[in-house]
Length: 275
Image 1: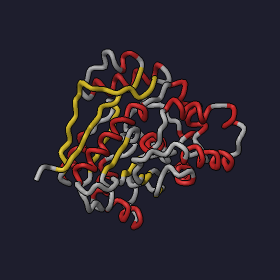
Image 2 (image 1 turned 135 degrees about the vertical axis):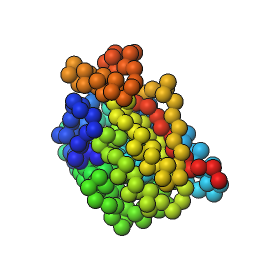
Image 3 (image 1 turned 60 degrees about the vertical axis):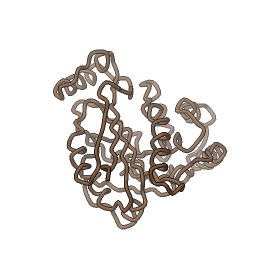
C-alpha cells in the first residue's frame, strides 16, 4: 500500500516521497511527465461496474465502493464527479494551486469537488497505509470513510471490518504488487453482502495468488489477456529492462507493449459464483 511500498516488481521505480504528502500536488507534478493514466483508463469501467453491481442487488440503493491503495482519492474523484484526469493534472499543477498552503488548498478543493459532484455518486471508502494522503481525501470530501491501515502486516481493525460489511464493490488500479492476497483475505472475511472486485494489474505482477484467494471466498475471476490498458511511461531504460524481464518470466509477450516504453495493465473482474 502506498505508505510502505515494498513492490513485488523488481526494478520498479519507487516514488515514496510523493505518496504521503499533505496534498497531491507533488504527486501530480512528478507523474505528469510520465503520462500516468491508469485512473483515466479505469474511470468508465468503474462506473459501469458500479451500475452493474447496483442492478444485481435489486435494491435500487447506492453501492458502497472500497478503493484499495486509494492514495489521495483520485479514483473516487473520477468515479463520483464530472471530471477527467487531465483536469485534475491541470488543477494541481497550475500556478494557482502552487501558491496555496495545504490548508488553503483543502478549502479550495472542498468547493471544487462539491461543485462537480454527480447525481449518481456513491459512498466511497478509502484504504491506504499512507495516513496523510487519506486524511486529505477525507478532508476534501472525496472519501466518506478513510482507513490508514496496512493489511499486509496486521488484520483489519474493527471500524474497517464494519465498513467492509456493507461494501458491494472493491476497486484497485495501482496497488497489486504492493498488496497481496493477505489484504484481500482480511477484507473478504468481513464481507456480509455479495462483493465484487475490479482490479487493474500490471502485467509485470502475478495475480494468480489473489485469484485463488478470491475463489476461496466464492468469487470467479475473468480476464481478457488481449485487452490491455496503459499505466505510464517507464522512468528510465533500467526500469523498462526490468519490466520486460518480469513480463517474460510470466510467459507474456512484451512486443508492442512494454517493449514500446510503457507499463501496461490487465483488467480482472471477480464476481460471486452463480447460485
